[in-house]
Image (cartoon, rainbow, N blue to C red; front, side):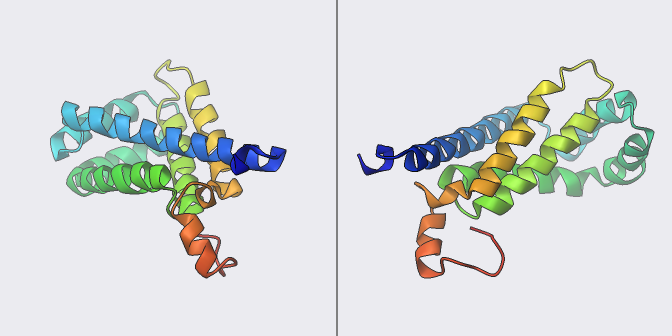
Length: 162
């Protein structure tokens, strides 16, 4: 198998596998959140209120309480779409991987801050953040992903979006 022939190609293949797994994790969490009703205005507001009440970062709690929760309908629908399309599908398909993985990494930092007072183990978010950064910088969508097709047309885009 050509992809397994050298250390470099094995690394590319493993990064592509990590990309797909991370995308699948986002899709699984999205599905679970959908079942729990967290993408409705009230469900999202109740869920986020827990973070506002428990986070150790007071500025973060203020943003949640004064901006995000009062506009929960908009944020719930935005999160519904972004988690499904940008974090889930784009990572699984390897489409615009550097951008989607970087945004997903920033989302993990957001969750790290949100859960800072809940007693939840922070390692999960730190590990996911680092994996998503590696996926982003490795351009893993160019291996077994749709980014490879885009790169054939234009191998050096002005912005590293694939």
